[in-house]
Length: 108
Image (cartoon, rainbow, N blue to C red; front, side, top):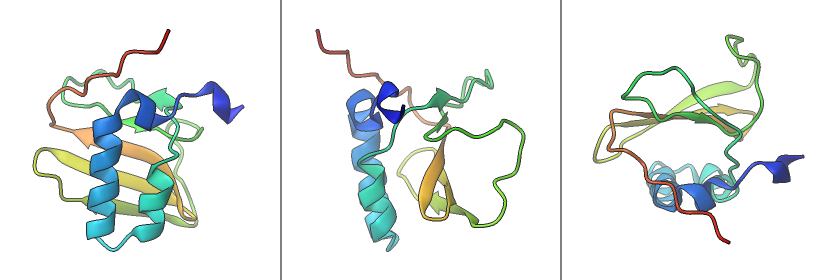
């Protein structure tokens, strides 16, 4: 079922490269490895023009993540990147106040 969702690295390759670099810089080696295989499950949909956030795993909207959740703020050169992580799995990538991410065109 996860294969139905595109890999983030195929849609936003520059973002994944940046996430891996920032995670390694923060000493989050295991999350950096996981970032390579993230899937784009659902875009945020909040409608805010400064938000390009997305889910990497299904989760009921408006529900807390619960036990095992931690927030991992990163320090990009522009805007804000913050990850919601549950039990070592990246669940949500918050992308705020950044230049528009350009989607890589799909292959024929």
